[in-house]
Image (cartoon, rainbow, N blue to C red; front, side):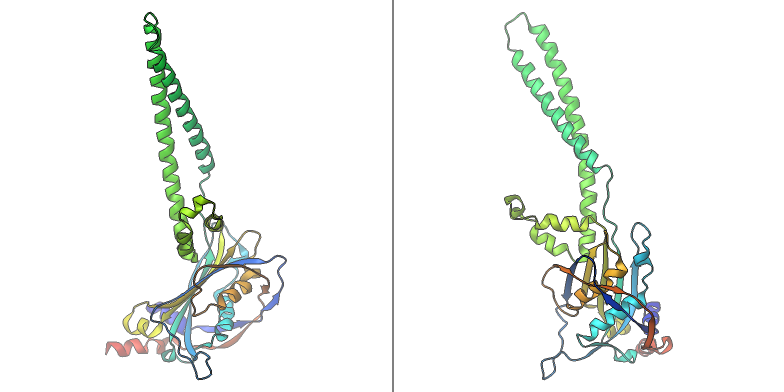
Amino acid sequence: MASLLRSCLALVLLLGAAGIGRAATPVVTAVSSKISRTYKRAKLPDGSYKRELYVIANGRYAPGAARNESIDNVKFPQIAALVAQYLARKNYYLAPKAEDADFLLLVTWGTTIPFTDLNRTGNLSSLSSAAGDSKSAMNNLKSALAASNLPQGQGSTVGEAVRTAESEAFRANDALDSMLLQNQVSESARNRALEQDARLLGYFEEMDDRNDVSRLAGAGAGYDDLVIDLESARYYVIITALDFKTLVNENKQVPLWTTRVSIDSRRTRFDDALETMVASAGQRFGENSNGLERKPQEGSVTLGELKLLGVSHDAKSAEEPAAEKQK
Protein backbone atom coordinates (compact mmCIF):
# COMPACT_ATOMS: atom_id res chain seq x y z
CA MET A 1 0.00 0.00 0.00
CA ALA A 2 2.85 2.39 0.81
CA SER A 3 4.36 1.90 -2.63
CA LEU A 4 0.97 2.61 -4.21
CA LEU A 5 0.67 5.87 -2.27
CA ARG A 6 4.20 6.89 -3.16
CA SER A 7 3.58 6.25 -6.84
CA CYS A 8 0.31 8.15 -6.98
CA LEU A 9 1.40 11.13 -4.90
CA ALA A 10 4.66 11.58 -6.74
CA LEU A 11 2.82 11.42 -10.05
CA VAL A 12 3.64 13.99 -12.67
CA LEU A 13 0.35 14.51 -14.47
CA LEU A 14 0.71 14.87 -18.21
CA LEU A 15 -1.86 16.24 -20.60
CA GLY A 16 -1.81 14.99 -24.16
CA ALA A 17 -2.41 17.07 -27.22
CA ALA A 18 -5.32 14.89 -28.23
CA GLY A 19 -6.70 15.50 -31.67
CA ILE A 20 -10.27 14.22 -31.89
CA GLY A 21 -11.32 12.75 -35.18
CA ARG A 22 -14.26 10.75 -36.48
CA ALA A 23 -14.36 6.98 -36.49
CA ALA A 24 -15.40 5.24 -39.70
CA THR A 25 -18.08 3.32 -37.84
CA PRO A 26 -19.81 4.02 -34.53
CA VAL A 27 -18.37 2.41 -31.42
CA VAL A 28 -20.89 0.79 -29.09
CA THR A 29 -19.83 1.56 -25.54
CA ALA A 30 -21.09 -0.22 -22.44
CA VAL A 31 -21.00 1.96 -19.32
CA SER A 32 -21.82 1.00 -15.75
CA SER A 33 -21.36 3.45 -12.88
CA LYS A 34 -22.13 3.11 -9.18
CA ILE A 35 -21.71 5.26 -6.11
CA SER A 36 -21.60 4.07 -2.51
CA ARG A 37 -24.51 4.78 -0.20
CA THR A 38 -22.30 7.03 1.90
CA TYR A 39 -21.08 9.20 -0.98
CA LYS A 40 -23.05 12.39 -1.43
CA ARG A 41 -21.73 15.44 -3.26
CA ALA A 42 -22.25 18.84 -1.69
CA LYS A 43 -23.85 21.50 -3.90
CA LEU A 44 -23.21 25.21 -4.17
CA PRO A 45 -25.98 27.84 -4.00
CA ASP A 46 -26.21 27.89 -7.81
CA GLY A 47 -26.94 24.16 -7.84
CA SER A 48 -23.56 23.09 -9.20
CA TYR A 49 -21.46 20.51 -7.39
CA LYS A 50 -18.81 21.68 -4.95
CA ARG A 51 -15.28 21.10 -6.19
CA GLU A 52 -13.66 17.89 -5.00
CA LEU A 53 -9.96 17.06 -5.20
CA TYR A 54 -8.16 13.86 -6.05
CA VAL A 55 -4.79 12.23 -6.51
CA ILE A 56 -4.52 9.67 -9.28
CA ALA A 57 -2.66 6.38 -9.60
CA ASN A 58 -1.97 3.64 -12.08
CA GLY A 59 -4.14 0.72 -10.99
CA ARG A 60 -3.22 -2.08 -13.37
CA TYR A 61 -2.91 -2.84 -17.07
CA ALA A 62 -4.17 -6.28 -18.07
CA PRO A 63 -3.06 -7.30 -21.58
CA GLY A 64 -5.24 -9.68 -23.54
CA ALA A 65 -4.44 -13.12 -24.85
CA ALA A 66 -2.32 -11.79 -27.71
CA ARG A 67 -0.05 -8.80 -28.24
CA ASN A 68 -1.94 -5.74 -29.47
CA GLU A 69 0.11 -2.63 -30.07
CA SER A 70 -3.00 -0.42 -30.23
CA ILE A 71 -3.41 -0.86 -26.45
CA ASP A 72 0.03 -2.09 -25.41
CA ASN A 73 1.56 1.21 -26.55
CA VAL A 74 -0.95 3.40 -24.69
CA LYS A 75 0.53 4.39 -21.34
CA PHE A 76 -1.05 5.45 -18.08
CA PRO A 77 -0.30 9.23 -18.38
CA GLN A 78 -2.18 9.33 -21.68
CA ILE A 79 -5.28 7.73 -20.17
CA ALA A 80 -4.99 9.85 -17.01
CA ALA A 81 -4.85 13.00 -19.12
CA LEU A 82 -8.11 12.16 -20.88
CA VAL A 83 -9.78 11.13 -17.63
CA ALA A 84 -8.71 14.43 -16.02
CA GLN A 85 -10.39 16.43 -18.78
CA TYR A 86 -13.75 14.76 -18.21
CA LEU A 87 -13.37 14.83 -14.43
CA ALA A 88 -13.00 18.61 -14.62
CA ARG A 89 -16.38 18.81 -16.32
CA LYS A 90 -17.84 17.30 -13.16
CA ASN A 91 -15.85 19.69 -10.94
CA TYR A 92 -13.24 17.12 -9.91
CA TYR A 93 -9.69 18.48 -9.92
CA LEU A 94 -6.17 17.33 -9.13
CA ALA A 95 -5.21 18.16 -5.53
CA PRO A 96 -2.32 20.65 -5.23
CA LYS A 97 -1.27 18.92 -2.00
CA ALA A 98 -1.86 15.33 -0.87
CA GLU A 99 -3.51 16.33 2.38
CA ASP A 100 -6.14 18.26 0.41
CA ALA A 101 -7.28 15.22 -1.56
CA ASP A 102 -10.77 13.86 -1.07
CA PHE A 103 -10.14 10.63 -2.91
CA LEU A 104 -7.59 8.52 -4.72
CA LEU A 105 -8.47 7.64 -8.29
CA LEU A 106 -7.29 4.27 -9.52
CA VAL A 107 -7.28 3.78 -13.28
CA THR A 108 -7.22 0.21 -14.59
CA TRP A 109 -7.48 -0.82 -18.21
CA GLY A 110 -6.91 -3.77 -20.46
CA THR A 111 -8.47 -6.43 -22.66
CA THR A 112 -10.61 -9.29 -21.41
CA ILE A 113 -9.75 -12.88 -22.23
CA PRO A 114 -13.11 -14.55 -22.91
CA PHE A 115 -13.70 -18.22 -22.30
CA THR A 116 -12.78 -20.35 -25.29
CA ASP A 117 -13.41 -24.07 -25.51
CA LEU A 118 -12.25 -25.26 -28.91
CA ASN A 119 -13.96 -28.58 -28.25
CA ARG A 120 -17.31 -27.04 -27.22
CA THR A 121 -18.93 -27.23 -30.68
CA GLY A 122 -17.69 -30.78 -31.11
CA ASN A 123 -18.92 -31.70 -27.64
CA LEU A 124 -22.40 -30.36 -28.38
CA SER A 125 -22.46 -32.29 -31.65
CA SER A 126 -21.30 -35.46 -29.90
CA LEU A 127 -23.86 -34.90 -27.15
CA SER A 128 -26.64 -34.63 -29.73
CA SER A 129 -25.37 -37.76 -31.46
CA ALA A 130 -25.13 -39.67 -28.16
CA ALA A 131 -28.68 -38.62 -27.26
CA GLY A 132 -29.88 -39.89 -30.64
CA ASP A 133 -28.05 -43.22 -30.19
CA SER A 134 -29.53 -43.63 -26.72
CA LYS A 135 -33.05 -42.95 -27.96
CA SER A 136 -32.61 -45.39 -30.84
CA ALA A 137 -31.22 -48.08 -28.52
CA MET A 138 -34.11 -47.64 -26.09
CA ASN A 139 -36.60 -47.94 -28.96
CA ASN A 140 -34.89 -51.16 -30.06
CA LEU A 141 -35.11 -52.48 -26.52
CA LYS A 142 -38.81 -51.64 -26.34
CA SER A 143 -39.36 -53.46 -29.64
CA ALA A 144 -37.43 -56.50 -28.39
CA LEU A 145 -39.41 -56.59 -25.16
CA ALA A 146 -42.66 -56.32 -27.08
CA ALA A 147 -41.55 -59.16 -29.33
CA SER A 148 -40.83 -61.33 -26.30
CA ASN A 149 -44.61 -61.75 -25.93
CA LEU A 150 -44.81 -63.65 -29.23
CA PRO A 151 -46.13 -67.26 -29.25
CA GLN A 152 -44.04 -70.03 -27.70
CA GLY A 153 -41.43 -71.52 -29.97
CA GLN A 154 -39.73 -68.22 -30.79
CA GLY A 155 -38.60 -67.60 -27.18
CA SER A 156 -34.92 -68.42 -27.55
CA THR A 157 -34.52 -66.10 -30.54
CA VAL A 158 -36.48 -63.33 -28.88
CA GLY A 159 -34.58 -63.73 -25.60
CA GLU A 160 -31.29 -63.27 -27.39
CA ALA A 161 -32.65 -60.17 -29.12
CA VAL A 162 -33.71 -58.71 -25.78
CA ARG A 163 -30.30 -59.35 -24.27
CA THR A 164 -28.58 -57.76 -27.26
CA ALA A 165 -30.90 -54.73 -27.14
CA GLU A 166 -30.33 -54.35 -23.41
CA SER A 167 -26.57 -54.40 -23.91
CA GLU A 168 -26.76 -51.83 -26.69
CA ALA A 169 -29.04 -49.60 -24.59
CA PHE A 170 -26.65 -49.83 -21.63
CA ARG A 171 -23.66 -48.79 -23.78
CA ALA A 172 -25.61 -45.97 -25.42
CA ASN A 173 -26.83 -44.61 -22.08
CA ASP A 174 -23.34 -44.87 -20.60
CA ALA A 175 -21.94 -42.89 -23.56
CA LEU A 176 -24.70 -40.31 -23.12
CA ASP A 177 -23.95 -39.94 -19.39
CA SER A 178 -20.28 -39.41 -20.19
CA MET A 179 -21.05 -36.72 -22.77
CA LEU A 180 -23.48 -35.01 -20.39
CA LEU A 181 -20.76 -34.85 -17.73
CA GLN A 182 -18.24 -33.41 -20.19
CA ASN A 183 -20.75 -30.83 -21.33
CA GLN A 184 -21.62 -29.94 -17.73
CA VAL A 185 -17.95 -29.36 -16.90
CA SER A 186 -17.52 -27.20 -20.01
CA GLU A 187 -20.65 -25.16 -19.32
CA SER A 188 -19.62 -24.68 -15.70
CA ALA A 189 -16.24 -23.29 -16.80
CA ARG A 190 -17.96 -21.08 -19.37
CA ASN A 191 -20.41 -19.71 -16.81
CA ARG A 192 -17.61 -18.95 -14.34
CA ALA A 193 -15.73 -17.03 -17.04
CA LEU A 194 -18.89 -15.15 -18.02
CA GLU A 195 -19.55 -14.19 -14.41
CA GLN A 196 -15.98 -13.01 -13.89
CA ASP A 197 -16.08 -10.75 -16.94
CA ALA A 198 -19.63 -9.63 -16.15
CA ARG A 199 -18.50 -8.41 -12.73
CA LEU A 200 -15.37 -6.79 -14.16
CA LEU A 201 -17.24 -4.87 -16.86
CA GLY A 202 -20.41 -4.04 -14.92
CA TYR A 203 -22.67 -6.51 -16.75
CA PHE A 204 -23.52 -8.76 -13.83
CA GLU A 205 -26.68 -7.13 -12.46
CA GLU A 206 -28.09 -6.53 -15.94
CA MET A 207 -27.57 -10.18 -16.85
CA ASP A 208 -29.07 -11.30 -13.56
CA ASP A 209 -32.17 -9.17 -14.19
CA ARG A 210 -32.64 -10.58 -17.70
CA ASN A 211 -31.94 -14.20 -16.80
CA ASP A 212 -35.52 -15.13 -15.91
CA VAL A 213 -38.48 -17.03 -17.31
CA SER A 214 -39.13 -14.28 -19.87
CA ARG A 215 -36.15 -15.62 -21.85
CA LEU A 216 -38.15 -18.79 -22.48
CA ALA A 217 -41.32 -16.86 -23.31
CA GLY A 218 -39.84 -15.05 -26.30
CA ALA A 219 -39.38 -11.72 -24.51
CA GLY A 220 -36.43 -10.66 -26.62
CA ALA A 221 -32.77 -11.60 -26.87
CA GLY A 222 -31.44 -9.08 -24.35
CA TYR A 223 -29.69 -11.66 -22.19
CA ASP A 224 -28.17 -13.41 -25.21
CA ASP A 225 -26.91 -10.06 -26.52
CA LEU A 226 -25.03 -9.52 -23.25
CA VAL A 227 -23.54 -13.02 -23.44
CA ILE A 228 -22.39 -12.33 -27.00
CA ASP A 229 -20.67 -9.16 -25.73
CA LEU A 230 -18.81 -11.06 -23.03
CA GLU A 231 -17.80 -13.94 -25.28
CA SER A 232 -15.77 -11.54 -27.39
CA ALA A 233 -12.59 -9.85 -26.16
CA ARG A 234 -13.38 -6.34 -24.92
CA TYR A 235 -11.25 -3.29 -24.22
CA TYR A 236 -12.08 -1.67 -20.91
CA VAL A 237 -11.20 1.28 -18.67
CA ILE A 238 -12.25 1.36 -15.01
CA ILE A 239 -12.02 4.44 -12.81
CA THR A 240 -12.41 3.84 -9.06
CA ALA A 241 -12.52 6.60 -6.47
CA LEU A 242 -11.30 5.54 -3.02
CA ASP A 243 -11.72 7.58 0.16
CA PHE A 244 -8.22 9.00 0.41
CA LYS A 245 -8.10 9.91 4.09
CA THR A 246 -9.38 6.48 5.13
CA LEU A 247 -6.79 4.89 2.87
CA VAL A 248 -3.93 6.88 4.37
CA ASN A 249 -5.00 6.91 8.02
CA GLU A 250 -6.55 3.44 8.35
CA ASN A 251 -5.01 1.59 5.40
CA LYS A 252 -8.52 0.63 4.24
CA GLN A 253 -9.83 0.82 0.69
CA VAL A 254 -13.31 2.34 0.79
CA PRO A 255 -14.75 2.87 -2.72
CA LEU A 256 -16.82 6.02 -3.16
CA TRP A 257 -17.71 5.49 -6.80
CA THR A 258 -16.68 3.33 -9.74
CA THR A 259 -17.27 3.89 -13.45
CA ARG A 260 -16.62 1.13 -15.99
CA VAL A 261 -16.62 1.40 -19.77
CA SER A 262 -15.89 -1.26 -22.38
CA ILE A 263 -16.12 -1.87 -26.13
CA ASP A 264 -15.77 -4.86 -28.45
CA SER A 265 -12.12 -5.14 -29.47
CA ARG A 266 -12.85 -6.78 -32.83
CA ARG A 267 -12.04 -4.51 -35.78
CA THR A 268 -11.35 -1.70 -33.27
CA ARG A 269 -8.14 -0.06 -32.18
CA PHE A 270 -7.94 0.92 -28.53
CA ASP A 271 -5.99 4.11 -29.25
CA ASP A 272 -8.64 5.17 -31.79
CA ALA A 273 -11.55 4.45 -29.44
CA LEU A 274 -10.04 5.68 -26.15
CA GLU A 275 -11.42 9.23 -26.35
CA THR A 276 -14.86 7.87 -27.18
CA MET A 277 -14.72 5.46 -24.26
CA VAL A 278 -13.62 8.06 -21.72
CA ALA A 279 -16.13 10.61 -23.04
CA SER A 280 -18.93 8.10 -22.62
CA ALA A 281 -17.75 7.11 -19.14
CA GLY A 282 -17.15 10.74 -18.16
CA GLN A 283 -20.84 11.51 -18.35
CA ARG A 284 -21.29 9.21 -15.34
CA PHE A 285 -18.27 10.06 -13.19
CA GLY A 286 -19.49 10.25 -9.60
CA GLU A 287 -23.01 9.15 -10.54
CA ASN A 288 -25.21 6.07 -10.68
CA SER A 289 -25.98 4.89 -14.20
CA ASN A 290 -28.91 2.83 -12.88
CA GLY A 291 -27.98 -0.16 -14.97
CA LEU A 292 -25.80 -0.93 -17.96
CA GLU A 293 -25.85 1.69 -20.72
CA ARG A 294 -25.06 0.26 -24.14
CA LYS A 295 -25.21 2.80 -26.94
CA PRO A 296 -23.39 3.71 -30.15
CA GLN A 297 -20.89 6.56 -29.98
CA GLU A 298 -18.95 8.33 -32.68
CA GLY A 299 -15.49 9.81 -32.61
CA SER A 300 -11.91 8.72 -32.09
CA VAL A 301 -8.70 10.11 -30.67
CA THR A 302 -5.14 10.49 -31.91
CA LEU A 303 -2.81 10.75 -28.94
CA GLY A 304 -0.23 13.39 -29.58
CA GLU A 305 2.67 15.05 -27.80
CA LEU A 306 2.39 15.25 -24.01
CA LYS A 307 3.05 18.35 -21.95
CA LEU A 308 3.63 18.84 -18.25
CA LEU A 309 0.64 20.04 -16.25
CA GLY A 310 1.99 19.71 -12.73
CA VAL A 311 3.04 17.52 -9.86
CA SER A 312 0.48 16.48 -7.30
CA HIS A 313 2.94 15.96 -4.41
CA ASP A 314 6.34 14.49 -3.65
CA ALA A 315 6.81 10.99 -2.30
CA LYS A 316 8.44 12.05 0.96
CA SER A 317 5.68 14.35 2.15
CA ALA A 318 3.07 11.91 0.88
CA GLU A 319 3.85 9.66 3.80
CA GLU A 320 3.58 12.41 6.40
CA PRO A 321 -0.14 11.87 7.19
CA ALA A 322 0.51 8.22 7.86
CA ALA A 323 3.57 9.03 9.95
CA GLU A 324 1.56 11.50 12.01
CA LYS A 325 -1.05 8.81 12.57
CA GLN A 326 1.55 6.48 14.09
CA LYS A 327 2.87 9.04 16.62
